[in-house]
Length: 343
Ligand SMILES: *Cc1c(COP(=O)(O)O)cnc(C)c1O
Image (cartoon, rainbow, N blue to C red; front, side, top):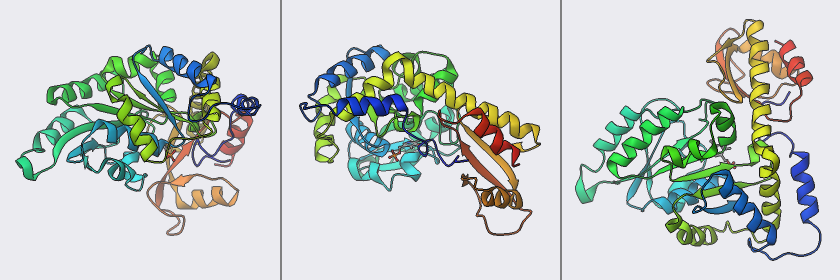
C-alpha cells in the first residue's frame, strides 16, 4: 500500500541482476567500460538520433540542472511551469548549476503555448538591466500526471523557435508518456522540437540511473565539463552502464511504464466504482483524488502511504483534501485491489 511515489518501489529484478553481473572483475572507470559504448549506441538507436550526445548521472536533479546549465547562460532565464520539479523540488540546483533564474509561466502543470508566448514577450524589455531570454523546460509526464500531446509539444516548440530559444524536457517519467502517446521516442522528443531530454530510469525500475540526451552534439563537451565540475561524473560507472543496457534491452523501459500506467488505470477504475472523486482521468501512472480528511485518516491508519497534495492529515474531519497516488511497474493486481477495498 505504498503509493507515495514510483521511486518507493523495488529495483526491477532484471536490472538488479545486470548490476550483479557487472560486478564481475574489473572495468575501466568513468564511462570507459565496454558496456557503456553498447548502451549508448542502443539509446541513440532508441531515439533514432545517431548524432546525439548521451551522458549518465545518478539523480534526475543532476540531469536537469546540468542539462539546463549547458543550454543557458547565467544572465538568462529558464521558463518553466509553477509545478515544475526544477522549481519546486530541486532546492535551487538548476539556479546553482546554471547561475541563472527561473521564470514561471502562469498556468497549470502543463505550459500553454499562448501563456508561454506572452511570458517570453514580457522578458528582455529592460535591455542590459533585465534577465535575458533562455531555454524553456517542460516536464513530460507533468508533475501532476498529465501528458502533453504531440500537438501541444509542437505548439510549445514553435513558440521557442519564434524566439530562437532551446527546449529542455524533464523526462523523469518520459517512458510513461511514450507508451501513453503510442508514438516513437523520437516523435516525443527531437521530432517535436525538443533539444535535450533528462531521460528517467530510477522511477521506472532502475537503481539510480538518469540519462541526459543532447540532440545537438555541439553541447557535448560543455556538458562533460559541467558534469565533472558539478561532481556528478561517477567513477564506478559500469554499474550505470549495466542499468542502461538492461533498461533498454527488449524494451524493458516501455514494458515497465506500460505496466505502471495499467496499474493506475486499474486502481482509478476501482476507486471510481467506490464513488471516489478523481480530479481527472489518469493519463499515465498517477492518480489525484479528493476525499474527506476522515477517509485519509482511516487509510493512513490501515497502513496506506501516499502524499496529501493540498492539506495536512490533522484538521476538520469533513474537509476535502486532494491526494496523489503513484503506481509503479511492480504493483500486483491483488495489491491494487486490496488497497481499493479499504476505501
Ligand atoms: C523524480 C523527479 C525528478 C528527479 O528527482 P531526483 O530525486 O533528483 O532523482 C525530476 N523531475 C521530476 C518531474 C520528477 O518527478
